[in-house]
Length: 64
Image (cartoon, rainbow, N blue to C red; front, side):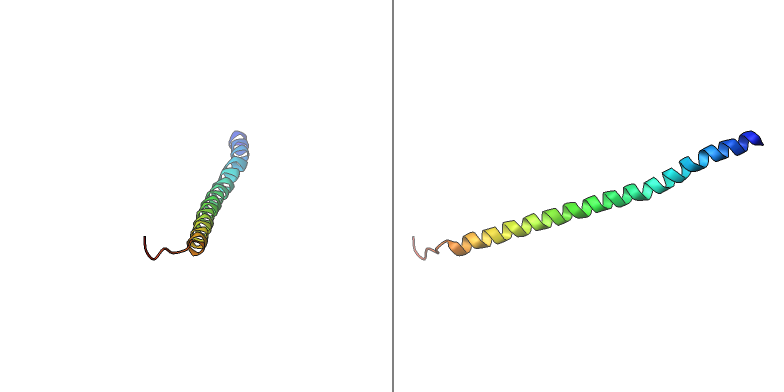
């Protein structure tokens, strides 16, 4: 009975730590993917605006 109680007491913090670590890791991974998507979106917007600026600044040739 003493051994069981000791084993239970030793295992509980480990199990609790593992249970807490899993959602934290998942949340971190989710945050990282959201940040990556935001970065890609921001980069795409910058490229699009730069492209639009270049197009606007380039005189249109009506005839070759």
